[in-house]
Image (cartoon, rainbow, N blue to C red; front, side):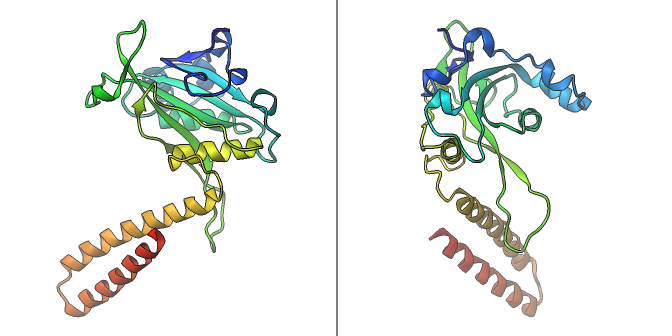
Amino acid sequence: MTVAQCGTVSALTLGLPATCAIPEAKGTLPKQMFYVKPPVSARLKQRFVGDVESITMLALLRPNTVNVAAGRKTREILVIGIEQNCKNAPVEVMEHIAKLRSASNILFVCVRDANLDDINDERSDSAPGGTGRFQCALALQRILPVRAGHQGEAQTQTYLSAWQNGTKVKLEMNGDTLDDVWQSLCAQVIFHDSDGSNLDTRLAKQAAIAELTAQITKLEGDHARAKDSTRRNEIFANLHKARKQLEALRQ
């Protein structure tokens, strides 16, 4: 069976089982199906029309296609390839597709021509039969962990891996259930490892580090600009406290 490809990337090149690969004849997803019904804004339509060359279903991960038990939360995982005409990953496009298929977890495989401006050719690979070189990045959406003392609607965030040589992007299938497999895939995109355990805790820690880092940067600027000695001492005390908290989080 010839499997569906996005650029030079397929389920097989990603290291996924052949049993979950989509046949080439069934892989193409017309772009229009995502923005005609329901209609979208002119801006988002332009993202589909101008930024996306093609959309391809590369793989469908279900208990019967990857030989794992059903998950309590994860019904299926779609692996969708997006061949893009732009340098940056089409985040708006991916978020819209994920919203339309909210019952499924989706791993996006973004593929771009590495001959775009400012892309390092030595990290790219030749595309058989094509004129360009292809690089690949992985992306997914995940519900953010709720922080203690915070209430409100659940928020989602799109995570994007670094761009790599298209032939070097590999996925590991880890876990006994589809929930475990999804957690591991999330870890591979976000943390560049396959350990899906305690992922919400790791994400909360990552967010706290980012928040403290931004706070420290602001405090450093405030301290440098402060003229009043009392105010400078107050800012320095807050800066010292934030640095200690950041140091503890990074241990």
